[in-house]
Image (cartoon, rainbow, N blue to C red; front, side):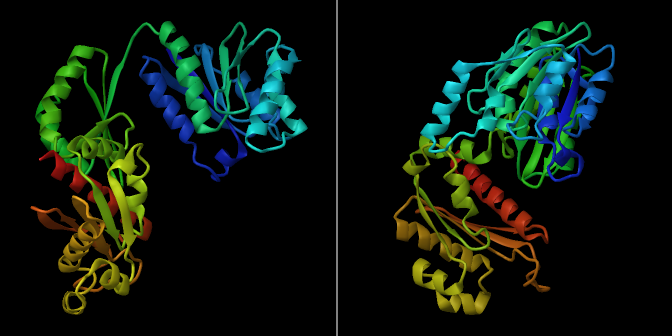
Length: 403
């Protein structure tokens, strides 16, 4: 089935915001066997929206629309849609009461402009919004059905999953089975070399989706058994790097492993500035295993709080395997935990040298019976270095616990 997509907002056209909704929607509808075959991004004004609706290709019977459902003066999408589909907006007193109560519990005084979000179509349908104030709209004419959703990603995704995708799925005859597997610590080309001998099935389609934190593989097939057989062949070969399916984050997988192993952990971070601690505490139940961390950015903190030897710093420098190990040892002993994890590096853009270039990072791991320091050379971008270092550290911990 061919699907149309209209994304509304000047911020999408002028580059103020990246259109992540379109990417997510495209992947989601493909899992039902449908595909986005036509896409327009338009300003939030009457002429632009009408023009996009008038130009929907004749072979497209379902159009998805995001953006322009807010309460402010520039959110005119609902009024345009009511007119285009020859429908009449009716005031929903019950929802207005619910909306006022929702705002009240949050300690916010509701604006009269929010009344625009309490309208319902006389002939069309409302798409529920469990987490926001702007409900979606579902209209139909002789040419196509239109599902209009807010631009807020979390609200849009709930409407898609709960209301729209089941409708698309029922109308799709040809199914496509999709699996997204997530890897880290290995390059795209190396993954290809490993799995190339198994890419001899014409029913398997493979897309590499690289990022700074790893490579996602999107594998699809119109035959589910072929997809399962292919995964059974390649996943054992990628076990060191493969950590999750779909869009699950590394820290969520790691949290389950730490809980199952009944371990405790603390971090001593220099170049990552607390990013590892932040990611670890993004996971539910992290308080059961993460006991705290120290951002030892300066040498004096490394010495005073982590018991790093001043002479070691003088001899090898703060960015060294020796200091990384003492930091990991120091945090483990100070916090009385099973595992100490440390980072020290040159994040950039300055501070590098011939012997210690920008992007040089050491990650230390210390337990009562195992200690090791891992060396990496990442990029020259500060934020990228921090992200890549945090990912590498979490994956080191995952591999250690899984051995």
